Image (cartoon, rainbow, N blue to C red; front, side):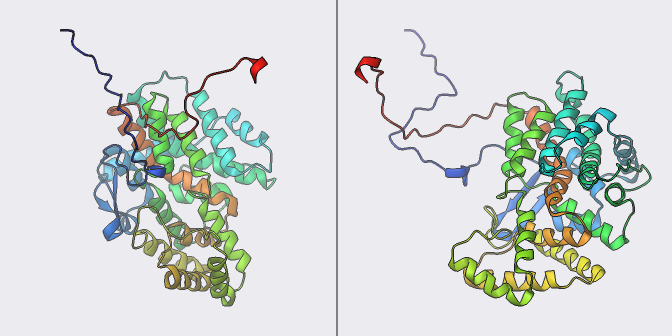
Length: 386
């Protein structure tokens, strides 16, 4: 009797599939990088609670952790920082590509293009063993690209990176030509840690899908940037600040929220697919947003924050997510609103790269099924009969 050969990727179609719209609740793989526990509103990177990392480590340490699985020793951190600082410069060609982009294009389009060009410049044949070095290059060079675009869109000259400054300090230097108060730098550094990684979110899953086809890490990152640009994902921090500017007066915030809910408007910065009782990153980011309010004297944004949060929680029991405090914090740091999401990219490239490496090391192409709801099978009639 001939043995029947079964395609391992074939799944017999039942009469009615259990469709998980948006992959809601679907577990598609394993990971050792991060974990969200909805019932306790907790997030860990490699086992460490994110709030502890934010309070006790600088961003470079967290990047090392995500790439290597353990926090660095003093010597390992020094070597990591030496490599990161040594890779910060971008080529004249890449700089010129960014300069030539339309001034009105969104900064996320600029950084997407810059990373794509960086991939074109890296002539190494695709090899998963070189992914960590490529990840380091993107970690170092993406802030330079973002800052260059920031300057060019304002008609200002490019400021080269300074290898004597930390990751966070250097970004302020490249954008503004100076390093602000240490409290401001610290608030920014904390935000990078909080944004660095978040399990199988939309953009991270996108990078893993691209990697699963054995495409390169630059293509995966460009795809991740595209996913992060959307207002339902990374772009929410921008929308939060536009909302606050629209409200303008903290005294009007409560009624604005009530009206928005009555009109069933989408209120950005609230709710999360995974967290049930609030985003674990919010208390830390809110603390440092308040630090920014204290440094700048712009207390109205935090008063507005409290009024909006109180009204939403009372009415819907929906809590803020990380984008809600991050938006006003970045605004008080002096960044233009449309650069909030590129800053997110600067942080999240660490998480994306860690997932690209993990996917490549134990790969199977990601290819889900779908339930067809279109027309039943039919046959083409000749033109004369149509």
